[in-house]
Image (cartoon, rainbow, N blue to C red):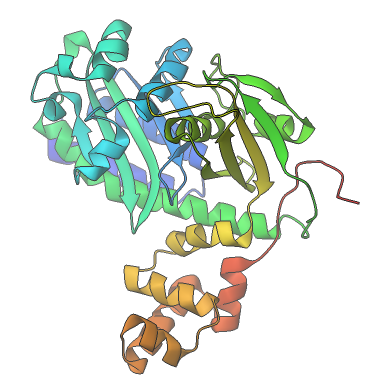
Length: 368
């Protein structure tokens, strides 16, 4: 029987092999789920693709979970103040957390456990944020049945070790989609935003043709009552929670990037719960929306990201040095490193790489 270190070595090797296959985010999730089920010892789980800038969930791949509870799970994630929510785990400085560890062994103090996990037959839960290089590339939750006991030190050690290579693989997958979006066709601008209306429960009430096309293109391999992709539901929940506007970037399975904007109608929403209807406007993601993702996806250091952003804005080397309180030679060294990591030869090519404006359309006629 293999010992834990052998298992860890085999798992890390398999992750490296998956990473080299050029898979999409969804394909990676499914391959990783199958790979990790045995070593981590879970009975059900879900993976969420996220907006790399905000961390908002935008897609879901699940296995072994009751799809009828999906809406409830999203609302608990967005509205409840629970120490095991992904945002709370990140705020506490963790990438990996379990239900038992977060609650000190008192699971009943978690509203997610009381209202969702326990009634679904689950006990402990392992949650991971795949954050890397300033980007929030995905999150995952793995549940164990009541009879399997809590996650132990061996599983936690493995979970900690896989976060970085999986984060790197997901970052690479985002880079592939960004490049694909730039080469899929010519720029097609001048299209009006598409519109969808969701009710206070996150269910689709109405949508125009463009919104319905995007919903179809982003259809997920789970069936739930809301009938909208995860990105629509989470941006609407966030707008309702804040009683104001919310925004998220989403990427379709075929590599097209869109910006979703949500706003409560008739003053609906509010921090306490599920208010009135929410309007979601969908537009092709502009270079401004894609720029932060493009910078993060190339694996630049924090300082390199600052330099790249100023370079894209047209600042000279001297100006960048003044703005960032650096010497000119230091800025030049950062620029050289940026060009090397992005595979371009000069600043002009860097700007073109990070801001290329090949935008998708929603199948609507252009403005006249």
